[in-house]
Amino acid sequence: MTRYKIVIQYDGTNFSGFQSQKNQSGIQDKIESSIFALNNNKKVKIYGASRTDAGVHALGQVAHFDLDSKLTDKELQRAINARLDKEIRISHLSKIEESFHSRFDAKSKEYNYLCCLSDNPLYLKDHYHVKNIDIKLLMEVSKIIEGKHNFLSFSKFSNKQNNDCEIFASKWVFDDKNHEKLLYIIHGNRFLHHMVRYLVGSMIAVSQNKISIDDFRTLLNQPIKDAKIFKAPSNGLVLKEIFYEN
Image 1 (cartoon, one colour):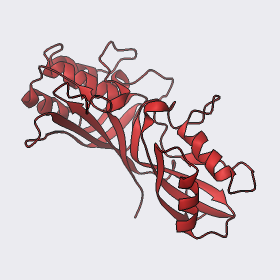
Image 2 (image 1 turned 30 degrees about the horizontal axis):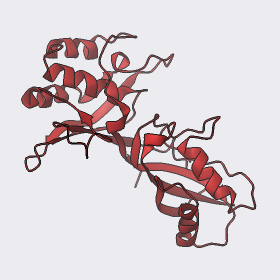
Image 3 (image 1 turned 180 degrees about the vertical axis):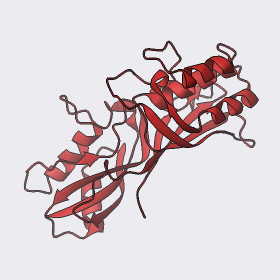
């Protein structure tokens, strides 16, 4: 039995997230179904590094699975892709040591969040349309997030005892050439449920003077569960890359 590592790209608009669902509408279900046909109609379970939610996209989702195959890596990659929905693609496939685990071996992740400043219909599907924002204030509040913090205020409440995450980079990038687009980049060792969407929604609220930057800082420094904060929609969120040792 050989273990394979795959990197997956997908448009999550029409799917119920990455994780397998009872109605078979998860990205995981679609990939397992594709591999099923290549394994004498026997199920092969894939293990994803991140459980992206419904509507969330990915450029660098990572997963692994075990399979006996006589195909080369390139042939196997093409065979899986040929049986997948057009919104899902395996961008890389390679053999990996048997001890590798896509989720537990991950060291950090980068998410991007896409915003547009106009109602250009070409952007609305996969961008969050925002209006009347103070970009300077938006960039200022993003820097508060960097470092190690308890992000309980910025997560969908769970019973997890550890809500600490270390954020290595948090920044907004304004496209000077295309004034319609705004990109948020966040890189951290781990993320809580809905954390990036809560952070983006709350930063946008600060930039629109709906809450103050001090209110934002208090939510970060004095974490509380079930905080009443703003959440950005799923359509703008992209899992950009997952980082591993070496």
